[in-house]
Image 1 (tube, rainbow, N blue to C red):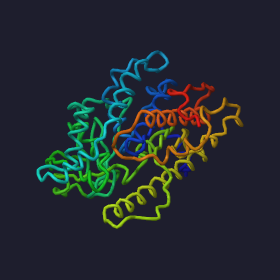
Image 2 (cartoon, one colour; image 1 turned 135 degrees about the vertical axis):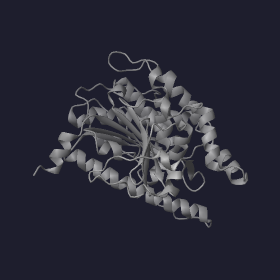
Image 3 (cartoon, rainbow, N blue to C red; image 1 turned 135 degrees about the horizontal axis):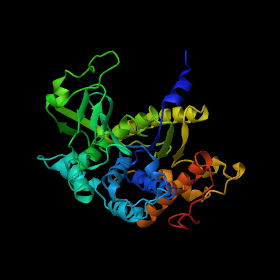
Image 4 (tube, rainbow, N blue to C red; image 1 turned 180 degrees about the horizontal axis):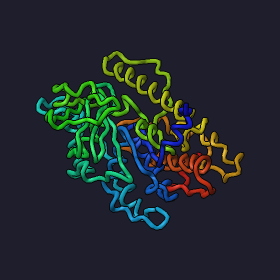
Length: 384
C-alpha cells in the first residue's frame, strides 16, 4: 500500500496562493504580499489564486485586470502599481459598510447585500463578470459559504460549484455579486441571494457514479443563500490544499483576544459568536498546513499578520536580515479593524509594508533558492 503522504506529494502539482479574509485590513495586507511576489517574478508562476472575503476584493480585481499587466521576461509586471495597487488604494480609502448597511436596513425595497453589490460594481468592477477573468493558468477561485448546505461554494470562470448540490458551467455572474457574497459578513451583509433555474445545474461524475446528495433539491438550486467565505474557511485554502505541490498562504487574520465586555445587544453577542467560530476553523486549517510543511508533504510558506518576523530566523540560516524588526507598531497590525470603512494613508502604507516584509521573509526562508532581499514600498512607516 502506498503511504498517503508519499502519494499526496507525488500527485499534487503546481503552485497555489491563498488570500485570507479580514475586510479592508486583509485587502491592504495582501497588496503588500502581491507587490513582493510581483517583484520576485512569481505572479505568473502561480497556477491558482484562491480567496475569501477581503482577500476576494483583491483577487477579483487582479483577475479582472490580469491581461493588462505587462510582464517582462522574468515575470515581473512593470505596471503593477498603476494597474493594481493605486486603484485598490482608492477603494480602501472609501468607506462603504455604514452607507450600504443603513440603506439596506431602513429601505424596505432593497437589502444591505444588494447595496454592497451596487457599491462594489460602481467603485471597482464596472459590470464585469466571471467570464471576464482568466479560466486557467492562472485560475482564480473565490469562495463564499452556502448557508443552506453549510459548505463552501466556489466561483471561477469555468464553473461555480457546491459539492453537495452540483455545478453551473460558464457562470455569467457579476464580479461585484461574487465579491459581495464572499465578503458578506453576517448578519448585516448576508445572505446574498442568487437565483437560477433548476435546469442550470449539472454535476461532476462521482467515483461511485452517484449524484450529489442535494442535486434533486430544486428549492436550494433555484435560490442560493450565501454568506462570507470565511465562515467555512477563512484562509481560502481548501482547493489548493488538495491539489497543489506548493502552497503559499497570506493570512490577515489576527489572534483572537479576550473581550471582557460583550455589550447588552444581541447583535454584538451574535458577532462575537461568529468571530469565535471563524477563528476556530482558521486555527485548525493553519495547524494542518504547518504540519504538512513540517512533514514535507508539500512545499510552500505561510505568512500571517500576527507573525513575529523574527520567527523566520533569517540571520540564523545564512540569510540577509528581515526588512523590519518586531516592535509595538508591527504587533498592532493584527488589531486593526476589519471593517469596510475609510483607511487613512498611513494605515494603508503600514499594512502594505507589513504584508510585503513578511512575504519577503517567508519566501526567502522557505521557498527561494537565492536570497533576493526586497526593499519596503514605503520606508520609515514603522519608525518608533
